[in-house]
Length: 159
Ligand code: PNS
Image (cartoon, rainbow, N blue to C red):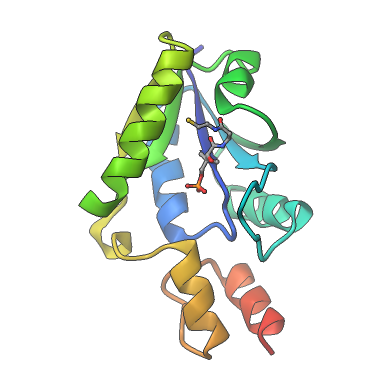
């Protein structure tokens, strides 16, 4: 079975992420959305439990997609899950350097695991979880960029 891991912070999951999940689910027999639980320097807005439940609700319609929280090295987790591919979304050239570095480092750690970049629909090219949080915090409309349940939660958080 070809298994792919789609790792990220998902703080929170956006329609751009869901678009990538949909593309990956049509390419692989199983896709595991892997939510990172080692924040290192990051300050997450949603805690691990919240991020998990937001993803669970957002991927209900995909039969071959699961979600888990992982900590430690992504490559160790991918090996544990017997995944041969790491999926990452690529929006713009600005993503490239960071993604390129991670992909090459992950390949150095395990040359049997390849990173596959998928481009989301162009309507999501300019969005990121951070930008969505900023817009929502200032009372802007993010309804085109996140599922309804997340829009409501963001409104509630910034009330
Ligand atoms: O959504 P993000 O924040 O861009 O995702 C980054 C993520 C979670 C994919 C990356 O930080 C990661 O893989 N973290 C796990 C620790 C690890 O393996 N680090 C080395 C990466 S080369």
